Image (cartoon, rainbow, N blue to C red; front, side):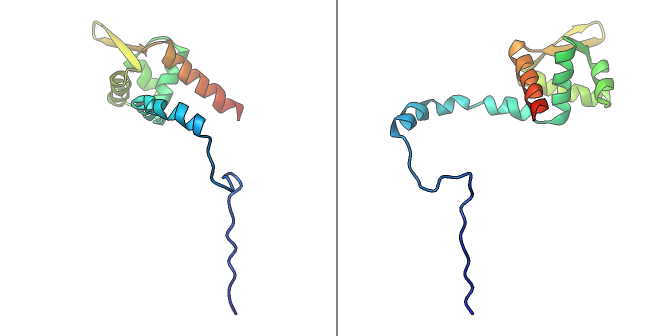
Length: 123
């Protein structure tokens, strides 16, 4: 007895291959503009760093000690994640005596995190 295997196409793909040359010609030269942007999302894809960034949307500035308590980690762990956010240009810091305070780098970072939270809560 022969076995018949039916090949099915997922419903979320095109049944035929075609493309709009004008659209491709218009978009393709600009597609490399995303280079480097993936690093922002990579930095924020870590749950701990996203929690820190979110905390910094709630409070405009936090001491490393506050951050470590908020996320339930050591100050060394909090410092490590804050340093990475700073190195990625997502956070900035200032030193006051023996204390180090962090804030988001600018309003764009605040908006990214805020919009992501809104989107996540909609679904």
